[in-house]
Length: 147
View 1 (tube, rainbow, N blue to C red):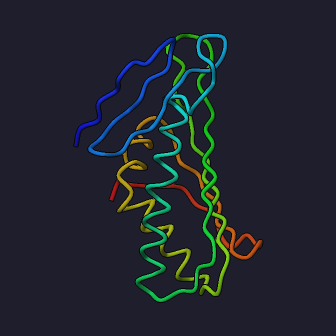
View 2: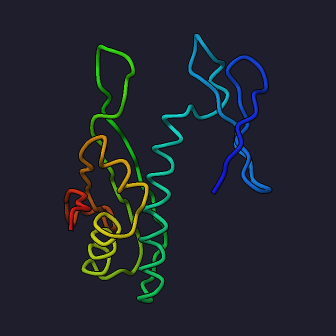
């Protein structure tokens, strides 16, 4: 796997992998906030990675998913540079005709076995999560890749 980051101007870069690209920028006052910044891209990667695991599991088990949103937040260290991630908070918001046990199993497997980005992120701090199905919270947990 390889990604090339080409500088455009100011703090703007374009990350390129194969035929795909994404813009990256810094927050003001250093950048123009014209795109996600590098730390936001890490959170996006975390949300998308675990979301893909869940979507695949639910499809495999013929669950009628209508929507899936992964809200990914992080608390940051304070004080001394560099500012890094301290903890992650994932909220899985799912709608559809889904057996709650299948959804909880999908999230659990993603956060204990399958999601490589979670396995990397957990080295920076704990990953806590909530699972909401059809606007009802059905479970909470914490990622654990130690097994």
